Length: 468
Image 1 (cartoon, one colour):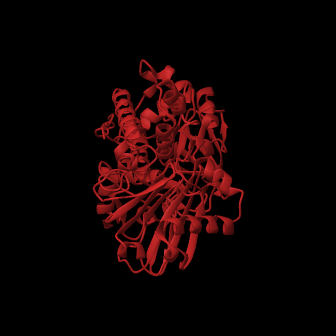
Image 2 (tube, one colour):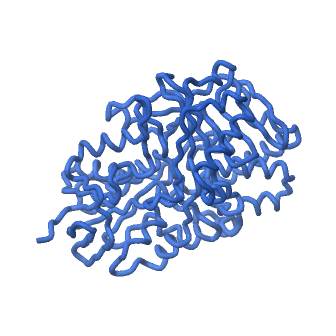
Image 3 (cartoon, helix red, strand yellow):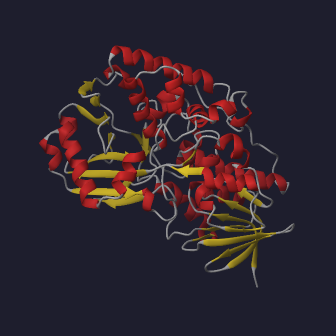
């Protein structure tokens, strides 16, 4: 006999677990099926020396109310990312130390700095009127969607050093190149995350806080409360729906459900077989929405020696393969950790090289900024998200030119009895843990509304100021 449920959730990341948690609170009979042998999806912890280092999503910042509230409810504490001291900016062949109160653009030549600030202001002005739930409705949506950020910078007369700086920062936001991302998507993301300064900053920005015990703790605590309703190592292969139900066919079992929520990254959702076939718009979406490219690396030391030298551990450099570093030491300070990212085209180049080569290049880069002490390390850790079979990239999916206006309406529009969640489907904090949690709650409330169990409460939410 095939067991039946009100809702089956595919994926036990933050989106799926939040959806199940919301449904269960309203009395739904829910089951979560997860392909991997763990929960968390794109949040992943690594135990080391009595602490947990995050190999996936890890930061929280102002405006991410859902995640802060969830941590509090689950009994988890947060602490600030270490940012005291001077940061290092290496750009255009010059390396500078910036005092704690100075912004990154202070290290740029005056002419570049002025143009960068003008561009950021112009981008914020254009993004202000974008509907986060339907960007394609903007009067200039087609125009903006048919070009990349590089195209727009070129058309607006930006000189090469301005473009180089913005390309560097945008690579850190999208884990992709400015020549690959729709300009409309750039504007959408700026508004979604509260603006350029919010997205790139530590203090008062998206990288401000961390979770004691690691971000995967959030997923594990939610899964504990769901108990046997979460089944691991159970990849779903096929969804068959008719007017009455959905048959969910996994490796281990087949179950029936009134509704299904798919929380996979859009590109990965193409792996499932759908009967009937997905709509042309949804098919176009999953084929065109590309995952970013990132390899996350961490170097572990006996202590955070850079702090003794008045450094924050933060580096921004236009010299690869690692373009950003952060102090990622545990909250108790028992040992030191420097965290770096290989992103975009650099990640693609580095994935073809061996682990030992990536380790050597990372240490050579660190030595250039922190001196010979950077060589005295205890361990090198990395997570190559490009080779993860259940994610195949990071941090999230992005829209290439033409995709928003052609396929955006299918991003979270239900396909019959199949609903969609995942951070890529969130209007607010798209691409972040906050966006994942919001999307799971939104998808659950869609279903509960259809089942007449709750009064509709889903509203179009707006993020904060866009201006630096």
